[in-house]
Structures are given as C-alpha cells and as structure tokens.
Image 1 (cartoon, rainbow, N blue to C red):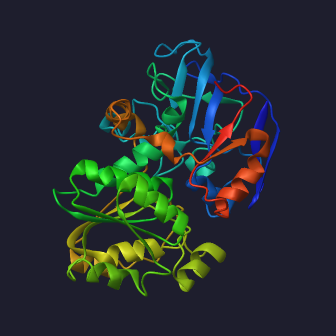
Image 2 (cartoon, rainbow, N blue to C red):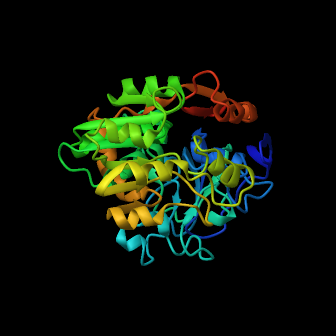
Length: 384
C-alpha cells in the first residue's frame, strides 16, 4: 500500500509499505477515505517531538471503510464508513471510564501522561497513522464511529480532531456569559476554538497570530476580532490589557504550542536547541494577559519535557490552567449534532486537496504557510 513515511526532520515521502494486519481480536483494518495533515504533525515533521522514529507513518485525522474486523469486534461491521478519533483508547481503564480518552492508561502503558495517539511518535504509543491507504485501528469497539447518513465525509474527518480539540479548548476555558476570550494561534484548531467560544456564551472573542491570511480567514469564519502581533502591537500582553480596561482577558486559549514565534530566547531554546519542550511564548502571553483569577486553556502541543514558564505569575494571579488532549469520543455526540444542525461547518476549513503521492509537497506547503493554506486534505485514489 502507499503510505507517508518519515525519514527525519523535514523529510517525508510517499512509499510502498506492507499492508496492516489484525494483531488483536479487537482490531479493525480500514481503507482510508480521508486523511488530513494537522498542525500537530508539523511538530513531528520539524523534529520537535521526542522519539519520532524513522519509518513512522503520521496521520491522526482519518476516516475509512471497514475492510476487516477481529473476532471480538461487535460495534462496527465490514463495509461501515467510520470516522476514527485520534485517541487510541481502550474504553475500560480508570481514565477512559471518566471520559478522559486522551489519557487512556492501556493504549500507552509506558507513559505517565498522554494516552495513545495515531501516528504521533513513540511517546504516544508508536501507532502508525492514517496518512496511508489502509490503517490498523485497535480497540475497534471504542473509537471508530459510523458516519451518520448524509454527513459529508469532509465534515466527518474534521470531527476526528480539529472540531473536538477546538471545542474542548473553549470548554476548558470555563467561559461565563459575556466573557472576553483571547485565542493565541489562528491555525485550524485556534480558528475552531474561536468559533466555539460563542457557543459557551462569550461576549467578545479575539484571535492573535502573525499571518494575515489566517487572521482574515479566522475573522470571517469565527466572526471574531483578529490582530497581527507583528504589525498591530509592540507587546501582545500590553495590547490585550489596553483593550480590556487594563484588567486582562477573562479567559485565554493557547492553540499554538511548541512552535510559537515572537520571542527570540524561547525560539532558540525551544525550537532550535531543543533545550525545552518547545517555544513557550504563547504560554507566557496567555499567563500574563489573562486577568487575575482567570483561566488559561492549553491545547497547543508541547513535548513531554520541561518548559520555561512564569509559574510565579500563575500563583500570584490566582490562575486556573486547564490542559489536555481532546477526548474525542466524549464530545462526538454533541458535535455531530452541531454539524447536522449547521451550527458548525468544519469542511469550510479545508483549503487544499493533495494526492497522497505528493504528501511531501503537502507538508512543505503547510509548514511554510504557502498559498494561503489553512487545512490540507490528502486525496486517495479510493476516496468516496
């Protein structure tokens, strides 16, 4: 089968790989129909996530047709068209039973934090992902969800990560009626988070990035204020304080993570020398621009090592920080309803369709922010 293959930082290609096989009675094999390149994949691509091994196939956002099931799979059947949450989750452990599918204890037993994630390095379990013609899906009674009749597969594929992650970012922010919310990062997740803030009662939503095309898209899609931190302000923290009567925002969402720009020291130590788990610039801005007693919600990905963050400010301001990988399965019922009712339009984020054989070009385009790319979708010969 044709699959994306990681060869080292900034080196990926499409190559022939062996077909996946059933390894456990609860496995399923799916023929992939949709797969995306995620902003989180760029952290892997750029070498910012530890233990990303040569030969790995990325891809944690995919849909597919069930081709084969293990002997204990009862919740899906051959021929079903399913969306596959990015969490690899057993459904039975202590954390899954609490709805914390992003922290499954069985799918990534060697880790003390994150659960299993498709195509996301050996720190997340070492599972191959869905940027391939076929994928093995463990715990097939838990994750794969049959796409509702009439739902566009382009909408369904974004329910595997982007929509639930953006939604959970807003949920974790603890938004109260009329709150001012600031979102750092106008990538797909940040844009979706800004859109979802309105669903929780926000009175004002502000998004900050450095790419004008992303800010224009976010302004239109999420109906929010959009500012360029390189052009519209000298200091994002002072700017936010100034436009909030010097109080600070009620809630701030970090949708950037490990590759934030805007601070030379953080960039050098976190992105170039890898002395910390990514550039924590957006985290600094979030902590320092939120009001006293406010909430910082973190969905931007950082590596599993130390970061230089102003913990004293967290303490002295009395802040609440909420952070996690989105628990897709918990959120799906509500989000499917929102999509079906037209409350959220996920597929509008898709700007580019790239053949799987050109996956290297797709990564380069997305990473370098070329051609006004917001969200790239990989196209398969067998797409339906």
